[in-house]
Length: 370
Image 1: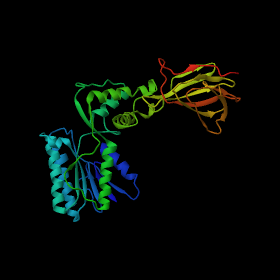
Image 2 (image 1 turned 45 degrees about the vertical axis):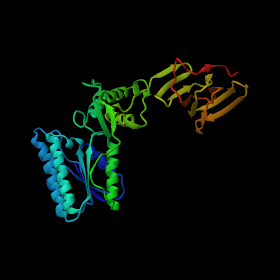
Image 3 (image 1 turned 180 degrees about the horizontal axis):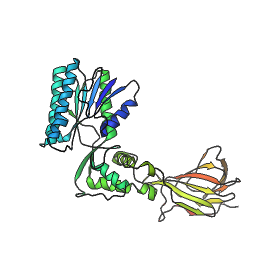
Image 4 (image 1 turned 180 degrees about the vertical axis):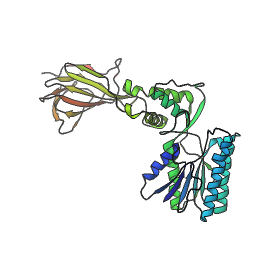
């Protein structure tokens, strides 16, 4: 398909164009600000994202939203065939203010085009969209919070309990891509205004608190529940504001005569990842757990794992090498240790299903014998 995207260099536009170019056999026509009479010849669909929300003068709302969309509708009508359109409008269109009025006028222009041409026009009244490439102090409060947190600038929250409705940029793009697939398949919509989702119902204070905690992933190796839902989307947005000069950082290392140990990450409910080294002949471990589980992967060197059943006294030994990657798992109730039996330094990666808690370590020291 040949897809025209207006406002292709804006926040939503840049994300959508990137997604469209990932698709085979898709040609993207970018229409930028200042393109008065863009060529729509041969396009199969239009995603209309261009508009203004903070013009220097209120009259800019009419020019940048209502009149711009009316010109687009006339250009589409002149093609002589029904070209489907996706319009990015705003929930502000339901309000009585200059911005909302200009958005309603833009909607009306495309609804008139749909009736006159028979084209499938889908209008989204989007709430607060956030995600990567949003501009701080312009596109969304989330972008501002993330930018400030990354750069050590305080976050200003006047009313922490103020409600906030958010929709993530990836979910917006997914909705638009589904529409484009419908256009390609000839599937028509049932009309009416649409909303991309899921919409996350939260408060300004909750969002600020989550974002403010993200730097702990570096300073304390601690991450929150960043694998799903709003926290996942906010974390990705926060990371997108980190400059390339700060992409890398050093973990806190603990060094003693045996070698070194460092935590890479500890999560809220999925344990922690760390690594350790051991010099030749050094044994680490020598304990058992009642509940905790660990997975070891020797990345470099030669290791001997020893196990003893704390109930029966049964023993087991296992030699592994970094040249033959093997995950060795500890089992509750079995004491275990690991010895470097090679000539060089041993490097081991370790995952534990729970973060270490000094108050409840579930790590009981014992000797496994000589």
